[in-house]
Image (cartoon, rainbow, N blue to C red):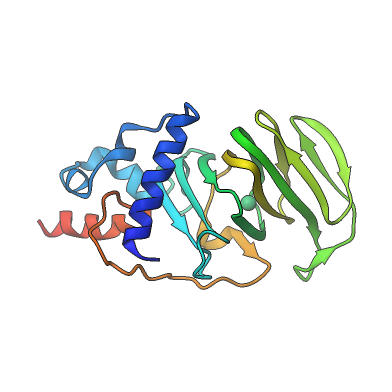
Length: 230
Ligand SMILES: [Fe+2]
């Protein structure tokens, strides 16, 4: 993606979160210059990749398949100093924008509609080869157990949530208006946990056509490097 698009969509997401009365930590608004002057007390944010993230899932059409999200808290399996066993994210799902079909290998997660439009989720159990299975499976809707058939569509209206076990494929999109979606889960490790039905292009390069206004969590290593060189 272009840095100009990243700047634009982060600003748009900030406005949307505020319109939904969902408020972020102060450092969500730090400029790159402010990050450069932060001290060691911010290390958890760098180590656990908290903050802004944006993806077009490597497909080059963000408005069709894409997502802006903000990781508020997360643990870290690789660093025992972080004992936090849970993760929380907040995201804006735009109209006409799909989060492609994927499951998590070990991570159980709740997807929560926190406001805005409805969220429609298509669900399938994965078979042992990672393909869509027609087998029935269980979910919880706000703690109420339901058995679903493969390919079921569930609509979450604002305030509603679904709990997904690992290995349950899910794809989702917003209807009526953009949706404010929260994820509460076990510790998230994007590098190991996610299995997309269509393999994604990893290590997406950013076209730096303008300077960053806000940093993505993937930008932090450059900042840390600069700190250690200073
Ligand atoms: Fe997921």
